[in-house]
Length: 369
Image (cartoon, rainbow, N blue to C red; front, side, top):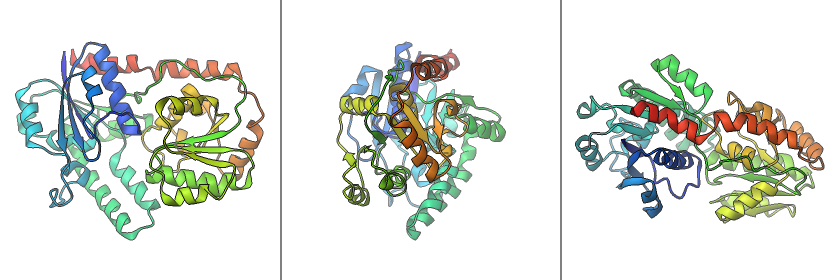
C-alpha cells in the first residue's frame, strides 16, 4: 500500500503544532505498513535524515519567495508552495495523495490528477484563522496582509470539492466542512504521546510551553506575565523556542518568572511532568491545541481559557477560567492541592480512545483499501 504525502513544511524535528501532527501521522501509517512518498516544502528548515525511517522516499522543494509568488491572485501560503517537479512526481507515480493543509493544495484540482484518490488534512478553517489573527494584529501593514490572505483563502477553499475526503482536526471544524462540502471525517491530531504519564501529588511551579515566536503564543505568554503572575508570588516557567525581545524584557522584571528557551526534548518532558499547573490561555478558538493535549498526557492540573477547549470534548479534563480574576483564583486554589489518581483515570478513559494514534491512522488506512 503506497501513499503520497505533501507536507507544508519539513516535519522533523517535530517541534511545533502543525508538523507534530504530520510527523506522528507518518509514524502511525508506517507502522501499519503504508509505504510513504513524502514531499516537503521548506523555507528555513533543513533536510531530515530521520524521515527516511518511516518513508520510502523524501523529496524537498523550496518555497517560492514573495516576488516569485507574484501576482498574488492565490493566497501566498498556497502560491508559494508549487513546484513543477512535485506535479511531475505526483502524476508519474500513480498512488493516492494526502495533502497536508490547504497550504499544499495548489495541484489538488489539476486535471492530470483527476482520477486519483485525493485527501486533504485541514489543520484549521484557514480563512477564519487568518481573520482572527488580523483582529489581534497591531501593525497596520501586517493587518492588511492578514485580511487579504483571509479573503483569498476563503475564495480558494472551494478547491476542496476535488478531494474525496477532508480530514478535520476538531469537532467544530468537522461541522463547518460538512456543511460547506458535504464531506468531512473527524481525525483528531496525531501526537507524541502513548500512555498517560501524569503523576499524582504536587509540583512547585506553573508552566506555559509553546513556540514563542507565534503571535498567538506570544500574546498568551504576555497575558500570563502582565495580567496573572505579576500579582502572584507563585513561580512560573515559560518554555519554548524563539522568544521575542518584548517577552524577554517582561520576564526579566520578575524574579519568580523564568524563561527556558532552549530545552531539549527530555528536559521539556521533565518540565511538563513536574509542573503542578499547566497554564494555557488562548484567545483563538481555532484548530486543535496540541500543547493542551500534551499537557493532559504528561502533566497535572490544566487551567485554560474557554477558547482552548471550545468544542474539543476536553472540557471535563480542564479547569476553565473566563476572566483574569478566575485565572488568579484557580491558580491560588490549586497550587497546594495534590493532583489525584482519579483525575488520571478520567484522562485514560477519554484520551486513550478518541486520541489514540493507531486508531486514527486506521481511518486513513481504510480509505486506501
